[in-house]
Image 1 (cartoon, one colour):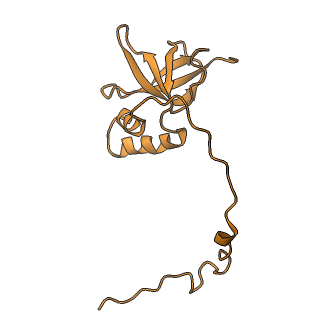
Image 2: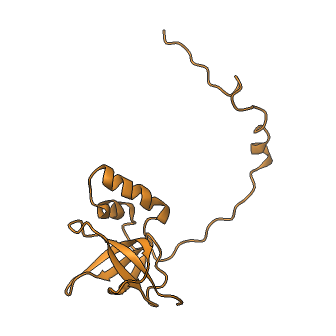
Image 3: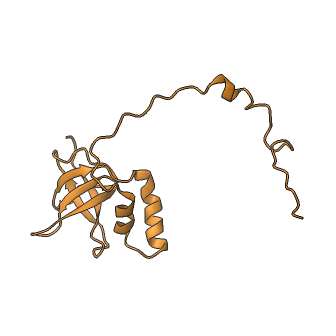
Length: 141
């Protein structure tokens, strides 16, 4: 696995609106920021959560299980902003942006293909900012 690492987890429990640090083990090595994981939250209960940040290794509990993919890491900044803007727990935004079912496999990305010549034929005919590229307004009568 290499060097030990940890992640900061935001649980899906809305009543607990603070992150916790968990250690990534060999069993949960595939976890990435935004994924859904299971953590040992208390002695009797497990909670699902999403890693929000990579951290230096803490002296806390390890992640229990990698559950699947969640919202992409690029979306977490927007979700954090929204939770602060509307004074709502971040967990509510994470749950609403996560798939309803656990997704453990992603389909392969489609091959990038060049655009057809017919599509590209008129691209350079109109310069940005010219009168031809602006929409003319018609006055209301």
